[in-house]
Length: 360
Image (cartoon, rainbow, N blue to C red; front, side, top):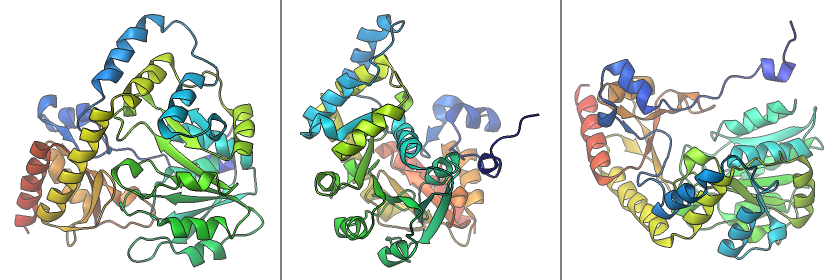
């Protein structure tokens, strides 16, 4: 029997939120009565222009897409007014990360991950037989820049900065990103999966620093989570190396067409942002548990003295799927992440949480 690499054998599987079909079966609920507020998906769905674009290219699904997703790269360059030499794309931000670490990280190297945050950084580091090094965030979940820099050594290859952070929702000030970038020789990866719902993007830093990379996704504000489209703004010297290691034809023709269609639908994008900002404000004032300020399309709540698993289970019995944050390293067992939904979904959630808390 062939054994996996030691680094893989020691890894825990990535824990994703449960899906509608699974919860409906488990609790005897009609699928139409289940709402999913666990995975930070766009509650408005995809842009109609993206759907039309999918229909138009569906008949060419038998053909390979371009090897480097150049059509998407060009559309992103025009949309963000960035040079093509500073843009790469991949199958989801996860795919972009995997390619970057394939290029720059090897056995014995290290990455620095401020906790709590998105757990996949730890996984993708381990794929390379490298070691994740954990830094603790401050009590308000902001990055402790001094602690991050104290963990840097000659083996450090990546520092992960998430803004807004998942699952806490707070942004990382640009001055913190600059302070880290100016103090290290390794790469600083700024994950901006949720920046559309906030302000203060670090894209401008890519041209100023040769070690800053900004990752983005079409899964959230753009409503295309099911098509797995990621991209990043990189220093020009990085792109050449990235393209050597990128999996060819990794973004399908259908995904590229949908992404380009979505980029052309400014009104749908604006509605997606607006509904999140209004819903976020409503939930922060109406949820009967302690909540934290958020600049993302989700809210973190502390359900103490209850346990997160109990609250999530009780909500699923009522047909509402939330994200138990106990699987996030360093979070503990009292935190639940809630995706901002439609007004009706938000009200239904608040009613369920009020019932659950009322049972104390």
